[in-house]
Image (cartoon, rainbow, N blue to C red; front, top):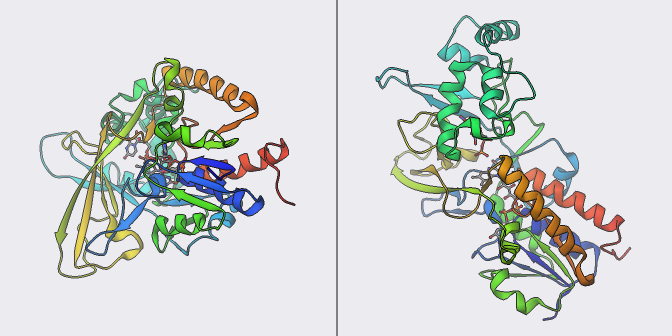
Length: 394
Ligand code: FAD
Ligand code: UDP
């Protein structure tokens, strides 16, 4: 096969490296993906009601890294979009009298559910000191339950985090690294945005449009429906491979235990609204931290970039242990097991002057936001040049 570099996976990790190789070397690059589309988990499409849906769950781009933004904003056009999330909180008795409250926890959350007299940062700090007074857990926290209870107190922990996490991970927060719930910030002000990064954008023509531009280069060929493990014999002559699939899949023949992942099942429902601007939910994403429903959140895609349609499509997310690997499960067992895979990966990289590099969310067994996946690819690219793994044409 006439090619110099093979990239396995057409998500951000693989596509960014493909683009960098194309722009900076004379190499012919082939990008393969086992799926029937580009974009990895960021893939989106417009449904028959004219609403753009992200096939693998809502994707909000946000970053603090200007270099990442400079790079990716050159592909497609992007519009500012600040994401807000409400959680549906039921009372502790059996009544159905629920309330919507902002996540992350901020002053409005406390006002809505617990104490309407909290008005400012000083009041919020005082309220939290009272709420956490009797809690003995101290940093470094042993797990996500400890870190969340220490920060928020028992009431917020039980209302917002315990059951949601149980549904999402099929594990109680006691059995998950502290990092899982540390992702959720605590705000002492009235900023109810989900993210505070200075750059928060959505692509006007969807992520798929961004990927089409990223991969649109005469030196890049894309082959879909091509699984590396089934077709690797076709690529024997290639000396440079970047693998962005699951690392335990790559080394499956070594007989090690497999890493654990969580997957999602999406249930879609479209409702006729008549009016093009009418929506069903009070926010684009409504979290469901209660055990009263089995799903974790409902996304109303029409709300992103204020799309207009006579219909609206709601997508409920159910967490599952079967299906495509989405979330690495951060706990002690998986962290240790991944370290063993990492050692195999280092040896593979150096084998027989054939270079195989492992990159991205699945190969690094790490939850990476999109900007981190792009940033990681940019950083690795610089390192590979410095280490002489790649020679650029200038
Ligand atoms: P992926 O996108 O997973 O791409 C890997 C590709 O490799 C896949 O297309 C896969 O099919 C392919 N592949 C795997 N094995 C093989 C094989 N054997 N042969 C051929 N191809 C193979 N990030 C944000 O910044 N904001 C968000 O709001 C956000 N929301 C998210 C919501 C969900 C539900 C999930 C799961 C993730 C979310 N993310 C979000 C994270 C985002 O999806 C990742 O940062 C991004 O997808 C990482 O890109 P990647 O290329 O490393 O991996
Ligand atoms: N989480 C929660 N309640 C919420 C939102 C999040 O318990 O209302 C927990 C849950 O364990 C989740 C983690 O915080 O997996 C990270 O949340 P985030 O919204 O960042 O998850 P993602 O969007 O990546 O699924």
